[in-house]
Image (cartoon, rainbow, N blue to C red; front, side, top):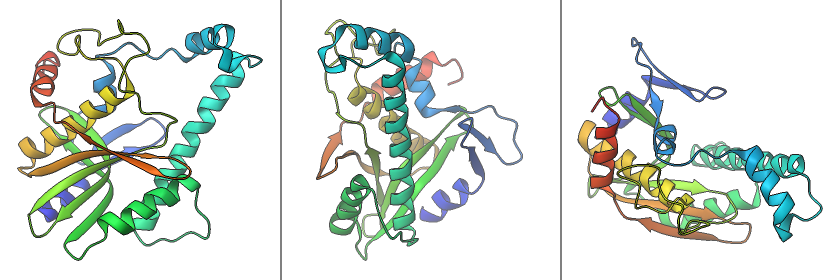
Length: 241
């Protein structure tokens, strides 16, 4: 099972700048798992939202829309840096200094993940040629004793929201129409789709799917419920399932 994961991941590459996946000896135009999930929810219009927040929300008083967008971009860049530092640490490419959030992930890894029975695979790409979907899992933990894996998704954003900003904000269409449009919903569906691909196209048993919310001084673990039926119906909507 472990060899299947590793060998298949070597066949596909991610072009970071365009976030495009390329499979060797194939002309399949893969859609990223993240992009696929986003098609079921309202698009994030950063200019519109930044203008609205800076003109109406007291937290952003005195800030221009441009400044707020620059702050968002800075936070995204930090998140990318943290992911890279975590990956390097797992691969034993140690740094002299680490971001505070990277330190929290490293603490979790050392206390909860590094065991003789575990194999850690960071930033692992998986895909399905049939579904034409591909994605990168932040951390796969393979347990040699159970022959099962767990999936970890690092999150560095300020807050994990389990409720939409407004109660009326839900998915755009079936089967997400009844789901709150919040980041926890998006992340849970993303991890659920990873699990679905692994179990149905890799024949690998996934034990659990988890979010780790990294903060400067601590981390918080969220165990996500597997949304299999919703994923199946979302894939039916994709027209190539």
